[in-house]
Image 1: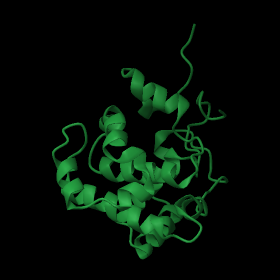
Image 2: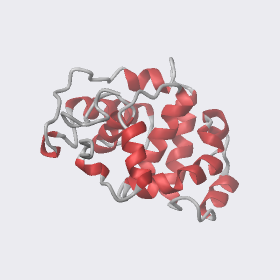
Image 3: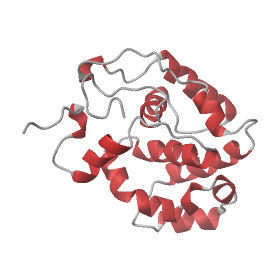
Length: 183
């Protein structure tokens, strides 16, 4: 019996990564807190492996009150210190402070964060045949990053914005023939 075709980045060695590819990546995520979680985790991932974030995701959820925007927006310097002491997450002051800042900005967005991000969906993007066909940045991710930054978000450059777009289904970058493409 042959293995199903999957995007090559998913690898086959780590069951957590494989499950993420098959069951989550590229599927629509909506709702302000859910999108805020993904914006935050993409920022924490910057410069690191996504598998590192996946392995720590439940710790992040516990440490950041399940990414409740109102709760994170109310964090104080004491919370920053608490988070810096939490070995279960990425202890980077700039990224922690960015997540808190981004919650405060998201709290005041007209229409909410989910609506703002989903305005940049690109369902008509070409179907990639190989990983070489998958861009790191697109005009859409540049526009999303620009809008988020204009609103006051931090750690949301065009590459991070595109990773977010891929992860939450604004584009479908599962390779042609991938078992998860049509799910």
